[in-house]
Structure formats: C-alpha cells, structure tokens
Length: 417
Image (cartoon, rainbow, N blue to C red):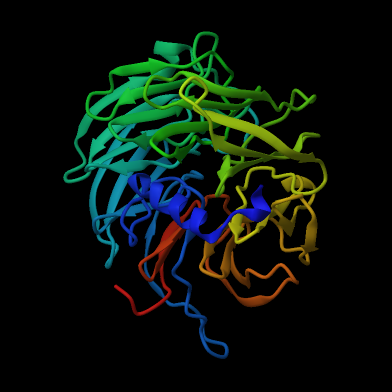
C-alpha cells in the first residue's frame, strides 16, 4: 500500500520515468520535466524586503497557455487580434527569435477567453501546439517553420464543448497524444514527424485536462481525464487498459485538473459534486499488464476546479473549491485524503513543487512561496509580479517564466545559469 512504499521503490520508479524527462534545466511541456509540476531546485528567498528581480519582459497577447523552454529558447502560444502566434524568445535576454502566426476563428461562447488554453510540448527540435479551435501545428524550433498541421474538427469531429479545446500535447517517443474526443474517437496519437494518425482510442468526449504518462517497468501508458471518467491506454497501440466512470451529475461542468501520477498511484479530482479519487496501481501479468484498485473517493477534501495539485512526500498541496465561489489552498494526506490544513484566503492559482517549497502563482498575479509542511501553512515569501491571469508558469535553471494577457516576464531566482 502507499504508506508502506519503500524509499527503494520510490527511487526505482523515479529512474523509470527518465525516458519522459527533459533536461533538468528545461521545462518543455505541460507541468514540466516530470509531468507533475515538480523540480528539485528551490528558489533563493530574497533577504529582508528585497524582491526577485525581473530580468526581462515582452508584450504578449491573450491566452492561458503556459510558457515552455528548452535549448536556450522560451516559447509562448498567444492570440493577437485574429491571429494565434507561436513565438520564440532568447532565454537570457528575451530577444525575439521568430514568430509563426495563423488565422484563428475561435470565439468563446461564454466570453471567457478567445486565446489558446493548452500548452505546447517540445521534443527533438519540434514544437507541437493545440489551439482552442482544434488546430494542431508542428513547428521546427530553429527557424519557426511549419512541419505539419492537422484540423481535429474536420478530421475527427472534435467538439468545442463549453470553452474550446484545451488538452496539451503529450509527446511519448515519436508520438503526439491528444485528447481529441468525439463520436468516433477519444485519445488520438499522431506521428511527431509527419502528423500521420498512428492510432485512435475508444470514443469518449473531450474535456479540459491534459494527458499524463505512466511508466511501469517497460510499459508506457497514458492517463486521461475525459468527460466520462479516467481512461488509461497503452501508448504503443491505443489499447484501453482501464476505465472508471468519474463524471459530474451537472451538465454545466468541466474536468480540468490533469491526472497526477504518484509513486504507485493516480490522484484525480474535480468540482461539480465529483470530488477526489485515488487509485493504486501495480504490475500484473502479460494478459492484464497493470492492475488499478481504487483506494479512496471523497468529496469536499480536495475538489480541484482547474488547477492541478502537486505532491511532496506523502502529501498533496492544491486548491479546493470552485474558482468563482472562492477556493482555498489545502494540504491533504495522500493515503486516506485526510485534510491536514487549510490556508488563509489567497484566491486560486497554479502550483509548482520546488524541493521543499511550494510556489504558487495566483490569478491576481502574485507569487506566493510556502514551505511544503503538512503541520501547518508556513509563508516564506510573496511578491506581485503580474496582472490578472490564469496561465500556469515554468521554473528551472534559476529562472521563472510567467505571463498574463499583456506580458511575459523572466524572474531571476538564483545565480545559476
């Protein structure tokens, strides 16, 4: 069981995840190098009343897409007027390297945001982006030239849903896996190099969570929070390994938090009378390669609206409750869902675990750093860095990159380069 997981098992699992990881100083996909919003490098807390210095800033357009960076460049997906843009900046100076733009006809039906929601992914010098209107683009990272594109609405009937298409691309080996959704498909895998369809999964409705990888021994799986529930497939052929219904009784609802893959389990959460689930998994046999067993299911513990929680040791840190009704940061014990503490109100936001720190970027644009301590809320630092926004952020190699709907900034967090 989870509470008896040895340190040896934890280390072995960490090593097995290495094929997915990028370099330690990169953050080249949604939720970073470990796909769980974690790095081991802590921020140097400024002394006295000093602030983390802004190294550079650049104007950007609309969107909730997170910045990503790799090989000396930072990339952002945004929208200006009727164009969506993929732009590369030099990581140390912020100087623009290239921009690829294309026409966007997406219009949000609820007036929330017309810009992109999903975050690009980079592998083998190819950047893949997914726009809210269902356009998938692959761009070479050197000069910003188009390699291929796919129209997921035209090709698969990918539905708009309430707020457009939001699933961030997951790149595993030479495959790009997307929550396409529709009457005929659910997850779909494309060739990273050509955009050719490699496999299609069983039909499920798309939602707003991104796909997360799972590696167990030599098995490479993908977990997706579709509208109907948790779907796990073999990334080699798209064969469904596991499904469990996990759906709100409320039609006007979204599943947005990404499945959080832990040492030997998966944590999944949503608002709208759904609550939190934790499944344990283990290797089984050739016919049933992985076994999944529900450990617990509770409501009003850590009901995540859109923000994916992070794990530190045997505890989760995340925002509980609907964004528009007031969410609260909580610490929850993984093994049984016990709430350890609830923080004073700060709004909601996105989180990264950095060593024994939890870094939070709130919707109001404030960086809040706390100690990852299950015994109580311990504030270490806070600083206003941006205006209103909902985009996640990226952190590694002594730099923190964050954006709102007006600017992209680079903060210096240590002397490391």
